[in-house]
Length: 337
Image 1 (cartoon, one colour):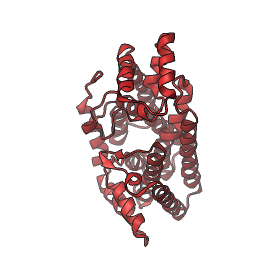
Image 2 (spheres, one colour):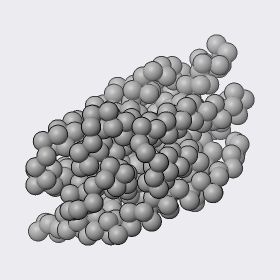
Image 3 (cartoon, rainbow, N blue to C red):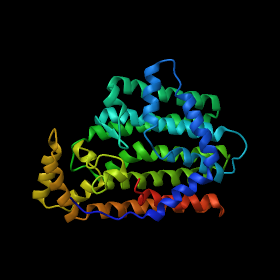
Image 4 (cartoon, rainbow, N blue to C red):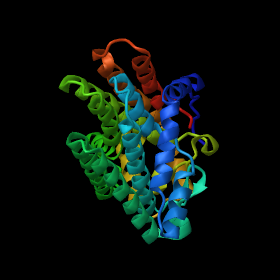
């Protein structure tokens, strides 16, 4: 059933270090999110609570809080409000993602669309986004409003770009990076830059934190896409082979295509053109994944972004916050949850 790459459990301590660093603030974030889920429409409350109670690392909220702390923001509750906003943007995009992908599971639980249908899921995702904009307007910082609103636009563009190239086994690596930059890295970058804005840092430090978040997000998504071809579902919390069955071309497939023979490339094109792919198809592709060590190579590419992410914080003075955020970049590459 393909190779199994041992994941480094020790690296997950960096995630818990960050969580412990911001734990008091994170409790407030959960309270704010819960208040924003309130609605006089009963179905909206049911769907949002189900969706947000299915787990999740709250990583983007934690990055906002950690970056704020690194940037010297201490007094006030703008960091918790905006961390909640970032997390709700993420939650809204996941609701929309599940509809587009026709997903039935997320983190081991049934998706909202599989229970209440696509129409309700789309509208509930829109509801969450509207609540995000309320938070941004209440905050009143035009720079942050522009940053987070443009990020929402980037995420939508990334989704459309991915749909445009669905089923293309010969997708260019450059196009793949562009897709994940828009879909995933943009929100990571916005989270960390928001912290810099709260700390009123200079332009160079704002861009350094934005770069840190962007490259962390790229590494995170490449690792996520690689896990799709070898992780155990009970650890990873998603259906293994999900991207493959949905016809999404991710980095392991791109690497196979770069290294494969003409016969193998033609085979991949035919497989990805199918309206539906079978378990037999998946196992055949896994054989090629193993043959060309595509997962290992993908993780090497992700490691490049990990290093860029760590280096971006070099402009900051040494501190506990800096050390934790730099260590977190390895978590994106070596996590098992």
